[in-house]
Amino acid sequence: MDYSKSGGQRTGKNTPRHAEHNAKGSRKNPFGEAADDKARLLARMKAAAEARKTEQE
Image (tube, rainbow, N blue to C red):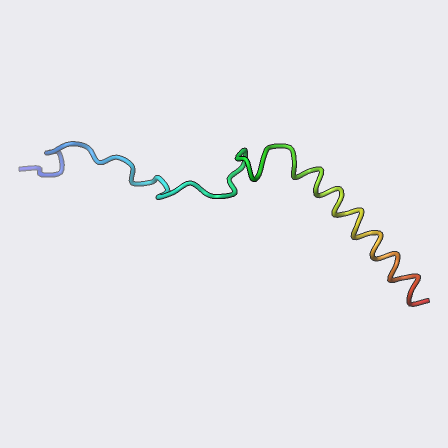
């Protein structure tokens, strides 16, 4: 007898146990915000590098 076919199907094996606190599209991490933050971060990093360069000379 094939016991693998008896009983109901098992569901949800590949689902996460909880939702991530910083998932894309959530209140803490909305869509479209990361690109602006990255551009601002890059500008700050370039300004800091330039300040260090002038400080060393």
